[in-house]
Image (cartoon, rainbow, N blue to C red; front, side):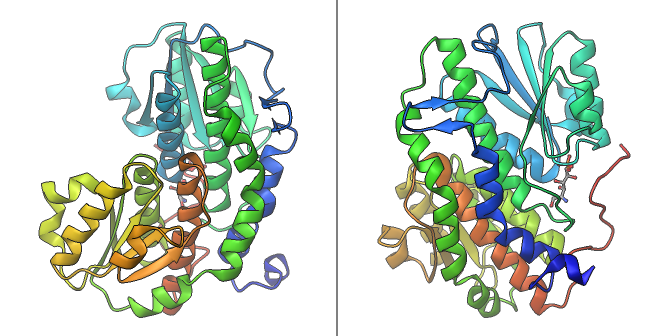
Length: 363
Ligand code: AGP
């Protein structure tokens, strides 16, 4: 097992550090900024022209990626929603044969997600899975499959696969919007070169992250909160899930604007707040973070250098400047590192947290 970890103490840290490579693999041959095209030759031309709405189904980290994908689709003008697969049988919106149901699942074997996929299929929806595992049940059963090519992920905590899922869903969303609207979405032109720069940006982030010292500084806290708006919201949820999963400490993610509607009552000097800035209404997120700070909570801003939040916050986790569609991904990698180092300080079994399995094959 140690041999598989290479120079790292844990698979999780290895997999976090593999992200420049796994993202490059995800987009290879699928993006061409010179011709301003998303190749995605996984699908025939105009294949999504009849889709009138998209429903994502997924669990856990994959659900957070699905929410990310759904928000990017909505921004591109396509009606879309992300649903927890385990709630789907009791809460699915109406489906018809122009509904595209996308199951997002790293393993392709999650029972809840397979059940939702089968239900969608039985009701006549068109189905697609976005997965890491070729030959998985989801890949075999869905009408179409799109592979994220992240390579094997051994750590129970999903890391590199979240990034690859979010990137593939962003690309897929642009492709669906383009097919449907008969022309490429307006922001595709600026998005493609940014996407191609992501592996390099991740290299820079990984080489200079302050996550280890932040984890040390706040290691005695009572609870850990994560806030974000727009595409920062799924990242806040994912930051909190990762933190609780491997540290066993209490952590919660909120939409930043929701803080004042209840959670603010929990905020004290013992509850650090990680505030994620993606370039979408950042001034409002900053105000929300300052509301927590006024109640004594230390605020850690996850944003580019030079952002107004750097001065206002107590601490800073730096991310390279990029498009709002991709900034959340970079922020998420900083939060993965914070969780990892916090769990390591607590001497947790990082790769195999108690009570959890890599693939959950029961409902
Ligand atoms: C994330 O760190 C978890 N291990 C878990 O939430 C996971 O994402 C979920 O069980 C879904 O798994 P899947 O992507 O294989 O369907």
